[in-house]
Amino acid sequence: MIRKVAITGPESTGKSMLAEQLAAFYHTVWVPEYAREYLETLGKPYQEEDILLIAKGQIAAEGCKLKQADRFLFCDTELLVTKIWSEVKYQRCHPWIIKTMSEHKYDLYLLCDIDLPWQYDPLREHPDQRQYLFDIYFRELKNMQRPFAVVRGTGADRINNAIEIINNFL
Image (cartoon, rainbow, N blue to C red; front, top):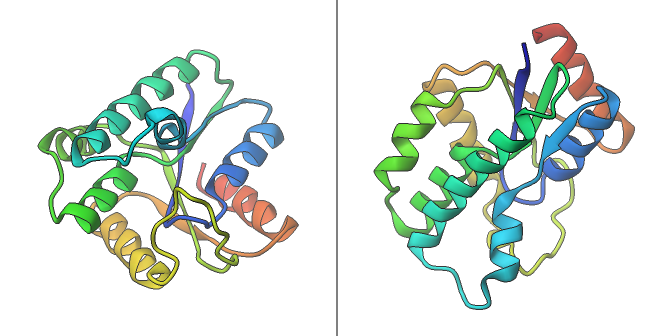
């Protein structure tokens, strides 16, 4: 049985790096953030309908990587990210995302804390709303009653904290 671990949280909290490091540590594969690939090739500013396409692309990419996984599959972002992104940007979320999110669950969600310095990236939009966004993620995970833990620390401490959480939960 493959255990699925979602790495989630606000932008610039080290989700991609953490997913890659965890996959290396556990000798398995990870699912990169599909939004980055999509937006970098879009060639124009994104629109609301792009968020739905990104959500579907993330789920499809996860399905492909699941076939290659060994014991664990680490997912850099998941549908909660697209839900919050859509609600913050457009004050609504497509029903497909909400429905699929309720059906598509993970064994563990790792919520990345905002204790890393924000780094500029042309795809990032909210350097001044990190605490606000973190609080939304925390509240959503708690309300959905999903198994989650907050990953904190910098450098080696962050990956070591994540490994300890995974080993204790799973």
